[in-house]
Length: 144
Image (tube, rainbow, N blue to C red; front, side, top):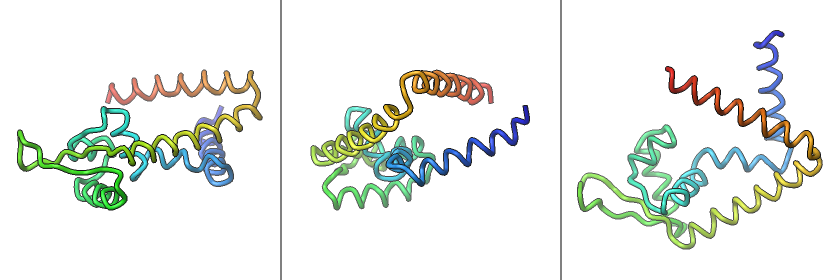
């Protein structure tokens, strides 16, 4: 098997899927404001801005800009860390939690529709392979 050519085919299929389906929002879960809201939701609604920067793999300046934008929308609020006044703690508001939950519900429903069309057997096989790829990727990451 030519793994390089197969990797290109998989990338092309994933790019096409993300452009041509109601699932394009899934990509948003891994970047930008939606990622930050999801991260805060998953971790008790509170995180230091430097932790958000590390989780997203971007600069603290970009996090500060995103947090400022989300603050204007009423999704988060900031406060100075009382233990270290140089740091900022970001808190998810009830409005931010409602937004991220609605977004996730919308994406989950779109994915559910796609999986129903795919069928049970192919869905189980896809899930098995995706989980296996995650295991291998995690091991490769920890070994490096």
